[in-house]
Length: 386
Image (cartoon, rainbow, N blue to C red; front, side, top):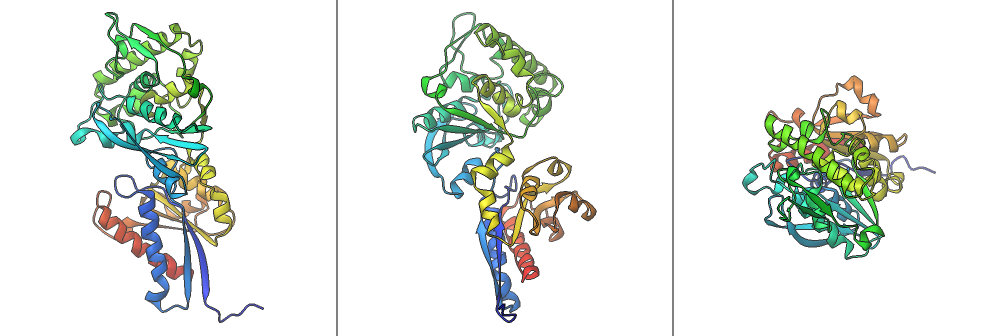
């Protein structure tokens, strides 16, 4: 028989994405959990909140950290950064699956002194990280493509994986947006280990490689590309497509128009050339990190990201979490929300808490403030649950 006087224990699954520019998904989960656990003692309630933490990613930056937090091992390796400098990178590996990400190998955050390099940044370091992953003999490699500094169509990545790009004078090209128009010949073939490994592109970007909705036009400006750079990059990528066709890729032109080819400055295109399977980043990572099993053992799911808006409704990570959480309450936490309360039901959300409701300061670039506010929000959520 149920004892009505017994202390109430609520089991909460904390499954957020990162707050971009402020906190990693793991840091968000830790702060919320600290607040939730403090709720009983701060209010004198005879109950407790048991927290299970599941930091998430959707195939963008933070994917390796999310996999490690869920039980993968971290493996470190030095690779070429976006402008050639050596950077310490890491992949996640569980004996079967390796997770390799653009952001921690050749991403925007790795540019020296934050100086954007729209024409000279390269994806070569990402290719070097893939080579390192191959040395571990995985059955599959998950390619997480968000956060790139380059718009080179994956030329640098392909060069690291054994494809040779030569200029008309015979020079070996390194791989960058600026060098796309210099390609005279392409030679090489897939590495045997690469041919025997399943490649999975985890991304929710649907842009094509070229044109008004292509990689240079849509993502070039955030990488520092002006109008002239965008035109040059688009022309260079078109040249890359022609050269890959001439090098023996009969589907090179068709793949350029494939949704997702334009992700990560066209790295998505190079991955498709190598035969990678493209999947929804949000849903793939929820499966990879065993979200369904974890949520089945919990009474409430708490998710979130830096900003909740119309794009969230279109299928970003909190939407995927909500869709899979069943009838249990779903609470979202965000830096700010552009969705009015009457739209919460579109995501099946019980409530949305935002940092902006707790402070007049801009917390987006202040990790300490963000964490403190998340602890307060966690305590308030805990109080409402007990």
